[in-house]
Image (tube, rainbow, N blue to C red; front, side, top):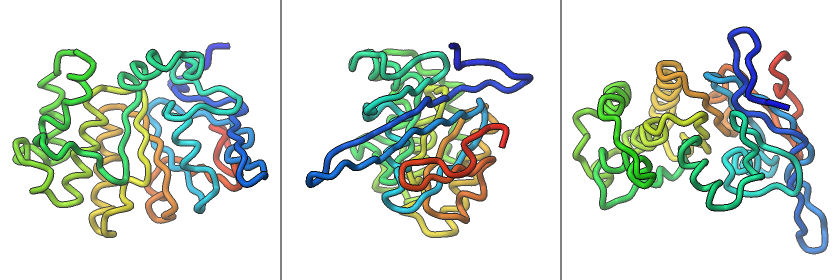
Length: 237
Protein backbone atom coordinates (compact mmCIF):
# COMPACT_ATOMS: atom_id res chain seq x y z
CA UNK A 1 0.00 0.00 0.00
CA UNK A 2 1.24 3.50 -0.90
CA UNK A 3 0.86 5.80 2.09
CA UNK A 4 2.06 8.90 0.26
CA UNK A 5 -1.33 9.54 -1.32
CA UNK A 6 -3.51 12.41 -2.45
CA UNK A 7 -7.08 12.89 -1.30
CA UNK A 8 -8.49 16.02 -2.91
CA UNK A 9 -5.83 18.65 -2.26
CA UNK A 10 -4.42 16.83 0.77
CA UNK A 11 -1.33 14.64 0.80
CA UNK A 12 -0.60 12.27 3.69
CA UNK A 13 3.13 12.70 4.22
CA UNK A 14 3.52 10.79 7.52
CA UNK A 15 1.78 7.57 8.54
CA UNK A 16 2.26 5.03 11.32
CA UNK A 17 0.81 1.56 11.37
CA UNK A 18 0.32 -0.33 14.65
CA UNK A 19 3.51 1.17 16.04
CA UNK A 20 4.75 -0.48 19.25
CA UNK A 21 7.71 0.00 21.55
CA UNK A 22 8.04 -2.45 24.45
CA UNK A 23 10.95 -2.86 26.81
CA UNK A 24 11.77 -4.54 30.09
CA UNK A 25 12.36 -2.60 33.29
CA UNK A 26 13.05 -4.39 36.57
CA UNK A 27 11.35 -7.51 35.28
CA UNK A 28 8.25 -5.70 34.09
CA UNK A 29 7.21 -5.13 30.50
CA UNK A 30 6.75 -1.42 29.74
CA UNK A 31 4.54 -0.56 26.77
CA UNK A 32 5.91 2.89 25.84
CA UNK A 33 3.90 2.77 22.60
CA UNK A 34 1.07 0.31 22.26
CA UNK A 35 -0.34 0.26 18.74
CA UNK A 36 -0.12 3.81 17.37
CA UNK A 37 -1.98 4.53 14.13
CA UNK A 38 -1.51 8.10 12.98
CA UNK A 39 -1.61 10.11 9.75
CA UNK A 40 -0.36 13.65 9.16
CA UNK A 41 -1.12 15.77 6.10
CA UNK A 42 1.46 17.71 4.16
CA UNK A 43 1.51 21.30 5.42
CA UNK A 44 -0.26 20.43 8.67
CA UNK A 45 0.85 21.71 12.08
CA UNK A 46 0.03 18.96 14.59
CA UNK A 47 0.67 18.99 18.34
CA UNK A 48 1.08 15.75 20.29
CA UNK A 49 0.05 16.36 23.89
CA UNK A 50 0.56 14.12 26.90
CA UNK A 51 1.81 14.05 30.44
CA UNK A 52 5.27 12.85 31.42
CA UNK A 53 5.52 9.12 30.70
CA UNK A 54 2.61 9.10 28.25
CA UNK A 55 4.83 8.06 25.33
CA UNK A 56 4.91 11.34 23.40
CA UNK A 57 8.72 11.64 23.34
CA UNK A 58 9.09 7.98 22.36
CA UNK A 59 6.60 8.55 19.55
CA UNK A 60 8.49 11.58 18.25
CA UNK A 61 11.76 9.62 18.26
CA UNK A 62 10.06 6.87 16.23
CA UNK A 63 8.60 9.37 13.76
CA UNK A 64 12.09 10.76 13.22
CA UNK A 65 13.80 7.41 12.90
CA UNK A 66 15.94 8.09 15.98
CA UNK A 67 14.87 4.85 17.66
CA UNK A 68 13.60 1.57 16.22
CA UNK A 69 10.20 0.16 17.27
CA UNK A 70 9.45 -3.28 18.61
CA UNK A 71 7.02 -3.65 15.70
CA UNK A 72 4.98 -1.56 13.28
CA UNK A 73 5.76 0.93 10.54
CA UNK A 74 6.59 4.60 10.13
CA UNK A 75 6.11 5.86 6.59
CA UNK A 76 7.56 9.23 5.55
CA UNK A 77 6.24 9.98 2.07
CA UNK A 78 6.39 6.49 0.55
CA UNK A 79 9.41 5.23 2.50
CA UNK A 80 9.22 2.73 5.37
CA UNK A 81 11.87 4.16 7.72
CA UNK A 82 12.67 0.93 9.49
CA UNK A 83 13.12 -1.08 6.31
CA UNK A 84 16.30 0.96 5.84
CA UNK A 85 19.69 -0.06 7.19
CA UNK A 86 21.35 2.35 9.62
CA UNK A 87 23.47 4.27 7.11
CA UNK A 88 20.61 4.66 4.63
CA UNK A 89 18.29 5.71 7.46
CA UNK A 90 20.78 8.36 8.58
CA UNK A 91 20.96 9.81 5.06
CA UNK A 92 17.18 9.73 4.60
CA UNK A 93 16.64 11.38 7.99
CA UNK A 94 19.14 14.15 7.21
CA UNK A 95 17.44 14.91 3.89
CA UNK A 96 13.78 14.43 4.74
CA UNK A 97 13.33 15.20 8.46
CA UNK A 98 14.17 18.40 10.30
CA UNK A 99 14.53 18.46 14.08
CA UNK A 100 13.99 21.28 16.58
CA UNK A 101 15.04 20.33 20.11
CA UNK A 102 14.33 21.92 23.46
CA UNK A 103 18.07 22.37 24.09
CA UNK A 104 18.65 24.17 20.72
CA UNK A 105 21.72 21.96 19.97
CA UNK A 106 23.66 24.72 18.20
CA UNK A 107 27.39 24.27 17.58
CA UNK A 108 29.01 26.92 19.80
CA UNK A 109 32.06 27.53 17.55
CA UNK A 110 29.90 28.20 14.46
CA UNK A 111 28.04 31.44 13.78
CA UNK A 112 24.32 31.67 12.98
CA UNK A 113 24.70 31.17 9.23
CA UNK A 114 27.17 28.30 9.65
CA UNK A 115 24.85 26.54 12.11
CA UNK A 116 21.90 26.90 9.76
CA UNK A 117 23.61 25.47 6.67
CA UNK A 118 25.54 22.75 8.52
CA UNK A 119 23.10 19.89 7.64
CA UNK A 120 23.26 20.85 3.95
CA UNK A 121 27.04 20.85 3.95
CA UNK A 122 27.20 17.55 5.85
CA UNK A 123 25.14 16.07 3.03
CA UNK A 124 27.56 17.47 0.45
CA UNK A 125 24.88 19.59 -1.21
CA UNK A 126 24.97 23.11 -2.60
CA UNK A 127 23.45 25.72 -0.30
CA UNK A 128 20.38 27.43 -1.78
CA UNK A 129 21.42 30.93 -0.71
CA UNK A 130 18.19 32.54 -1.86
CA UNK A 131 16.11 30.15 0.24
CA UNK A 132 18.41 30.53 3.27
CA UNK A 133 18.05 34.31 3.00
CA UNK A 134 14.25 33.99 2.84
CA UNK A 135 14.25 31.85 5.98
CA UNK A 136 16.60 34.27 7.78
CA UNK A 137 14.33 37.18 6.83
CA UNK A 138 11.14 35.39 7.90
CA UNK A 139 12.64 34.49 11.29
CA UNK A 140 14.14 37.96 11.84
CA UNK A 141 17.72 36.70 11.85
CA UNK A 142 19.24 38.72 9.01
CA UNK A 143 21.19 41.01 11.33
CA UNK A 144 22.38 38.02 13.42
CA UNK A 145 23.86 36.16 10.46
CA UNK A 146 27.46 36.33 11.74
CA UNK A 147 26.67 36.26 15.48
CA UNK A 148 27.87 33.42 17.67
CA UNK A 149 25.30 31.39 19.67
CA UNK A 150 26.68 32.70 22.98
CA UNK A 151 25.71 36.22 21.92
CA UNK A 152 22.07 35.30 21.28
CA UNK A 153 19.07 35.19 23.60
CA UNK A 154 17.24 31.90 24.14
CA UNK A 155 14.50 32.92 21.73
CA UNK A 156 17.04 33.85 19.07
CA UNK A 157 18.87 30.54 19.50
CA UNK A 158 15.60 28.66 19.07
CA UNK A 159 14.86 30.62 15.90
CA UNK A 160 18.27 29.56 14.57
CA UNK A 161 17.37 25.95 15.38
CA UNK A 162 14.08 26.37 13.48
CA UNK A 163 15.92 27.88 10.51
CA UNK A 164 18.37 24.97 10.50
CA UNK A 165 15.45 22.52 10.41
CA UNK A 166 13.77 24.36 7.51
CA UNK A 167 16.64 25.03 5.10
CA UNK A 168 17.09 21.40 4.04
CA UNK A 169 13.47 21.59 2.76
CA UNK A 170 12.48 18.44 4.67
CA UNK A 171 9.24 16.54 4.24
CA UNK A 172 8.52 16.98 7.94
CA UNK A 173 9.80 19.04 10.87
CA UNK A 174 9.70 17.42 14.32
CA UNK A 175 9.79 19.78 17.30
CA UNK A 176 10.54 18.29 20.74
CA UNK A 177 9.21 20.68 23.43
CA UNK A 178 10.67 23.57 21.40
CA UNK A 179 9.66 26.22 23.94
CA UNK A 180 10.60 24.26 27.06
CA UNK A 181 13.57 26.52 27.88
CA UNK A 182 11.82 29.81 27.04
CA UNK A 183 9.64 32.20 29.01
CA UNK A 184 5.96 32.45 28.12
CA UNK A 185 6.24 35.60 25.96
CA UNK A 186 9.21 34.26 24.00
CA UNK A 187 7.44 30.89 23.69
CA UNK A 188 4.44 32.51 22.02
CA UNK A 189 6.69 34.47 19.67
CA UNK A 190 8.73 31.41 18.67
CA UNK A 191 5.63 29.25 18.13
CA UNK A 192 4.00 31.97 16.06
CA UNK A 193 7.10 32.11 13.87
CA UNK A 194 7.21 28.30 13.60
CA UNK A 195 3.60 28.30 12.43
CA UNK A 196 4.16 31.17 9.98
CA UNK A 197 7.24 29.55 8.47
CA UNK A 198 5.44 26.23 8.21
CA UNK A 199 2.65 27.87 6.23
CA UNK A 200 4.97 30.02 4.12
CA UNK A 201 7.26 27.18 3.09
CA UNK A 202 4.54 24.46 3.13
CA UNK A 203 6.35 22.53 5.86
CA UNK A 204 4.69 19.76 7.84
CA UNK A 205 5.29 20.27 11.56
CA UNK A 206 4.74 17.79 14.39
CA UNK A 207 5.40 19.17 17.85
CA UNK A 208 5.25 17.48 21.23
CA UNK A 209 4.37 19.52 24.28
CA UNK A 210 2.81 19.22 27.71
CA UNK A 211 1.64 22.84 27.50
CA UNK A 212 -2.05 23.08 26.59
CA UNK A 213 -1.77 26.76 25.69
CA UNK A 214 1.06 26.09 23.24
CA UNK A 215 -0.82 23.14 21.75
CA UNK A 216 -3.81 25.36 20.94
CA UNK A 217 -1.72 27.08 18.25
CA UNK A 218 -1.62 23.88 16.19
CA UNK A 219 -4.08 22.87 13.46
CA UNK A 220 -4.76 19.58 15.25
CA UNK A 221 -4.16 18.32 18.77
CA UNK A 222 -3.33 14.63 19.19
CA UNK A 223 -3.59 13.31 22.74
CA UNK A 224 -1.59 10.34 23.93
CA UNK A 225 -2.00 8.43 27.20
CA UNK A 226 -0.25 5.24 28.31
CA UNK A 227 1.24 4.70 24.87
CA UNK A 228 -2.07 5.00 23.02
CA UNK A 229 -3.64 7.83 21.06
CA UNK A 230 -6.91 8.73 22.75
CA UNK A 231 -7.93 11.70 20.61
CA UNK A 232 -7.05 13.40 17.34
CA UNK A 233 -5.26 10.60 15.54
CA UNK A 234 -7.80 10.33 12.74
CA UNK A 235 -7.51 12.93 9.98
CA UNK A 236 -11.27 12.74 9.51
CA UNK A 237 -12.12 13.12 13.21
